[in-house]
Length: 286
Image (cartoon, rainbow, N blue to C red; front, side, top):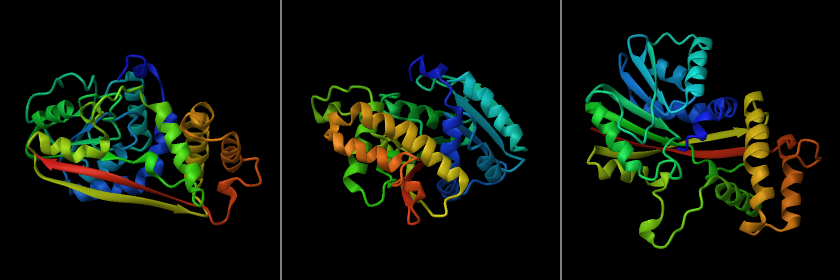
């Protein structure tokens, strides 16, 4: 997590993403079976997009502690909680997750961490998970959720373009990693279950939580696909990194044609359009 990233306000994009992911969040939180009155730590809470869902799980007798490195996002999170009339008591703490947390051991009943432990931000995610295990009570659960953005199906029927666009996006997003051996490959979020097992948590499990949308798309879903997936994430990446991952000029043009609202071939205007994403949840008990 760079110091620069702590001063970048991505509140709008994050909240659009949270709205898109809501069915998967609900499914994942239901799998945790949190009881009312639970004190849950939201690790890397960002602008608080999950507070309303967490509050539904733990009730007004519970407690949510949100931790994030960005004060900008903590301020936004407080506003989100007010807008959604969250009744569950809320504590917000600014902290660098790469450092020991300033909580006593065995403070929380559960720790929830959604789309946070990316390898370019946390080269040693196991250390973060071990710290979560320190602050969660014996018997409590640690949950690590990832939306699997770069393995989603956003361009149905255009397999090669989708694969290349995802590779371009991944390349643009990642730091340049010098991989000299298998041991030097960053620990991908796809190995989150291994992180939990490595620190000795009990009953470690992995569950899948799919998302599916089709026409007619809800307004907020169409907005997310148009403004974030196509315009902010994949579009610039295709133009800057497309050639590097093997896209021809014609393929870059074709991608633009499919993802530009003014185009007659715009995917979100096609009556058969659908998208599919498969989130994963790794859990383990202290």
